[in-house]
Image 1: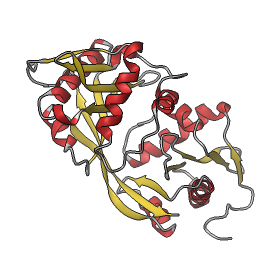
Image 2: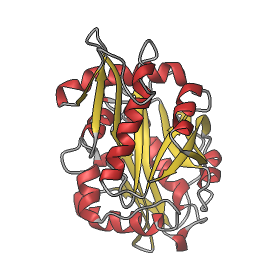
Image 3: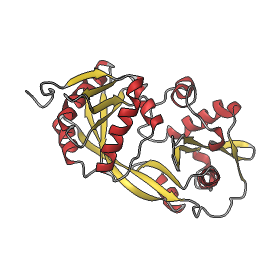
Image 4: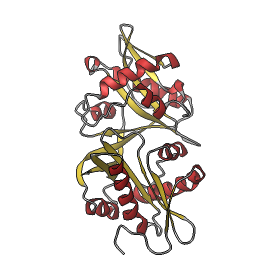
Length: 302
């Protein structure tokens, strides 16, 4: 038996919607071991189930021992693989699931595939590197307790909640701003709606637009925090190049943090690419956010 094959009695199968609760429990168990707290919601599970590839490994006792999927937000020649195994006995599922995810990405015509790991996850890092992945960069998961010290209002920048009618222009600003980052892969307005709006539990009272001289200069998109969630999550923050370093991003964060607090959230969080050329990390530390943990990103050419 090779590392990429399951032991006798273990079963691989596609996921179904009925697996959602078991998958959430699996990821929570994995998170507790890796970072010390659960950092996944039922909405995140649903998102993973909508992707182009999603499979589980079931142990001989009938328990879900591992889950792998390709992130539905990837594509455009690059896929992102997520692999979770239960910390108690799920390790035999890790390399077979990673191999399946790589094969699925190749079948979809991807030229590269990425995966991420907390630096302390030695078995996972060994599996990634053994599969031909190499280190690329780091992300940081940022967080702050609410209320946060975001500073005074910025003259000339007006922030309001987004409306359904704003969404086409909301996307245009998001798309234009993220084209300045090296890893952005444009997908078009319809794909963005399918990914984040249509059929999703969107709370537009936690989405914001910032206007300068009556025109939208920046946008902030929040993610639903799920059942019992007490953390507001900034999914995307985008400011047009000509309006950066003028307080637009800070004003958007201030509005989001205030709304999160009013909606009963106790914390705010987001993820940031530490290699982002816009130096977004300086904006986030400037409003009191601090790294909760960092994750290494690895890549393999297909």
